[in-house]
Image (tube, rainbow, N blue to C red; front, top):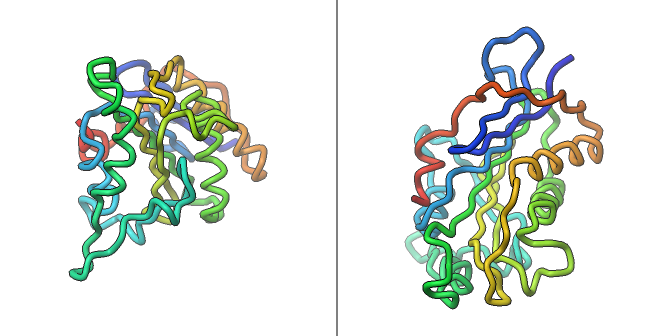
Length: 220
């Protein structure tokens, strides 16, 4: 059968779920990527709201976050461009409070992409998936939204979203991030079951298609 999901954590272990008999990760149906951590959350957000390298970004907007999306959406200037200063400042605030105790690279970024043959998921469905990822990774457990990390989920295409978080909790502690790649996989499996998608095959240790430099490097 067709394999449903894949994810990789760059810089650690690359793991992919493939169509049986293929020799590359190109047959992967859905990919979740926890990208290398970075420092520039404003730069990453600007890129995700921009046109992309091949004009592939369309209708960028926030679908979920530590606050309701309408409270976080960057406003439009008179020129038509977005003003990201408030959003970036809100996300950075807990990290700024930690000072020297904060992580050197506090920007956490995970992208999730659906298969071309899948039905188009709604904003609400993607938002549920994003919240489940944040819960399972321990970055924002359910019921701890006022104490956990600040995060957003941006959708800028029909088939994928990006999760962006700062690795600093609002209760002035650092989050403990352990085995996040496996927790992302758990969230993918749960989404398959919830929305009636095909089940994920067992993982192997082969390499999936790498994330683009643009999307993984903008927070560096």
